[in-house]
Amino acid sequence: MRMDLLPADGSRASGQGEIRAFLEKQMGTKMEMQSPGVACFNNKDVPGVAIENGTYKQSGNGKPIEGSYLVVLAYLPADAGGPGWVIAQQALTAKPH
Image (cartoon, rainbow, N blue to C red; front, side, top):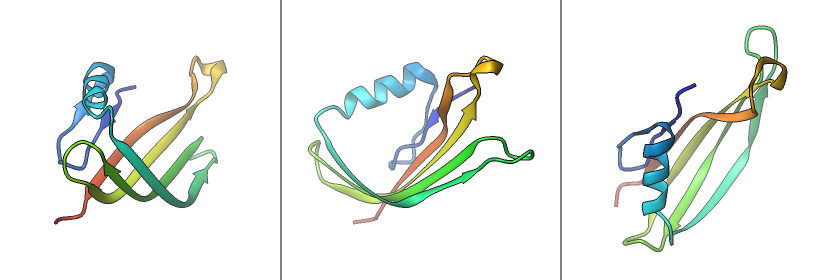
C-alpha cells in the first residue's frame, strides 16, 4: 500500500522516505488538534475504514499556521498479512492569512 502525506502547503510526500524527511523538517513545531469525532465503516462493501477530520494550529517553525485536516484509516487484518489500522490518506489545508 502506498502512503501519501499532503501538507497544508499543497506539496505531496509519497512513501515512507519522503514522509520521514518531511516530518523531520517539522521537528520542534507544536501542533494542537481538535476533532469532533471519527466515522467508522465496517461492512461487506467497505471493510474497516475510519475517517477523522478537524482543525489544527501549528507553531514553532516560522509563522503559525491554522487549518483543517482529514485522515482516512484502513484496517488490514493480521490474518491477511496486514499490520492492523494504517493511514491510507491524510491531508492538511491552511487558512489564508
